[in-house]
Image (tube, rainbow, N blue to C red):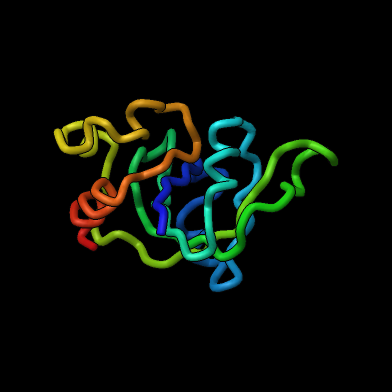
Length: 138
């Protein structure tokens, strides 16, 4: 299993909306960065990701699961290279993990979220995943 961090501006698509989508989940569309696209193509059914509120909140608030692997993004022009995956909400963190808390944790100094802060879909290592889950009460 691989781990990811999916960023969303809560005024565009929030954790509450993700939860409301239920078991059918939602297409994670609109990614227009080549590194993020390559990460999305690596995502496999069953992979887990953190749901991160960007811009407003700047915190990990929940865990999602990939339920459909990469396919052509329906929000992109026909023939474009952009893809999306489908994800569903799994569980909310008991305690949101803020960006400030991530920056303050020495064991997370190499996390891709900090190293490539503008990347909308960074990979998370297994060690980072376990630590962030612990920080979030999971």
